[in-house]
Image (cartoon, rainbow, N blue to C red; front, side, top):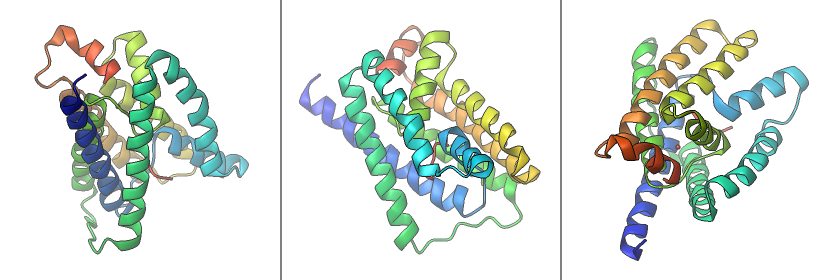
Length: 215
């Protein structure tokens, strides 16, 4: 890959990671949307067994990153490490310094739609340009590769499964609004990854080229 093209992919990945973090903090967190993916599983572990969420996410990430090293290659892992680092840093900066409050109040349907569009677009950009923003993203890519189901659909199914299990401690309506958000995000991820790419080339592109989410 030419250096200019590689730099372009990196810049887009970083922009996608920053937009994802911005959206998770200002839309999901500020409007009390629930969590899917590995963070959702970590919260289940916290409520059920009092496990540390940060440690649980790390324990889930490690084997996934090892598998991705073999199936996706070193460049993908390096891209993912970069995207994950930028995501975490941006989220931390938003949490500490952002003056913006994007609370949709009682209009949770609008919050879910905005979350789905923004997070789906951001995650799709990262995927399209060769990276991921966490271990659950990598799982979605690997499952998509094995099953030929679009990566956005796999994202959506994983998040919904985790959210349904989370119902035993999460309010019903918060969970349903989040399911709406991740359903929209799944569609937007697929559209973003596939846009302008010949249909036959999409599965290969999406494998070499993703709610979730800050703990």
